[in-house]
Length: 115
Image (cartoon, rainbow, N blue to C red; front, side, top):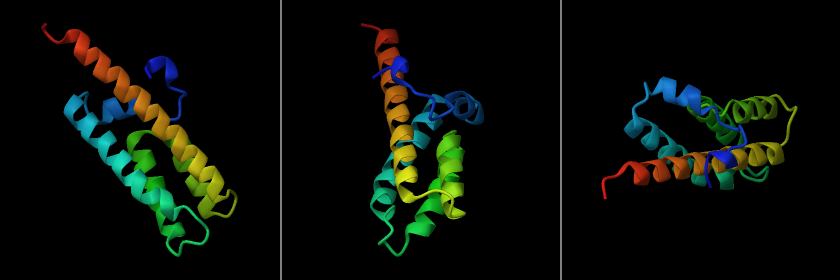
């Protein structure tokens, strides 16, 4: 995966600006988001008693990393205008963008490393 694989689910320019371009902060924030997504995913089921709390948490975290479409889907879900399938789909899209972005950053790092 590389930048060509990014579909626009995450506004990385927003994240980079928010982190003042600090690569370490960006990497830590995205790693934390991915770790938390693994915890949220099982909760995004209508049979789970905490699904509403999970959707609310995902909404805030998504907006914090620049995944505004995911945040908007979560907001609509909280309002009863979207289902959890839409939240899971938007979360998957954000995670795919994050993976492509992280891959691109890793490639750039390798290319700029002294050999």
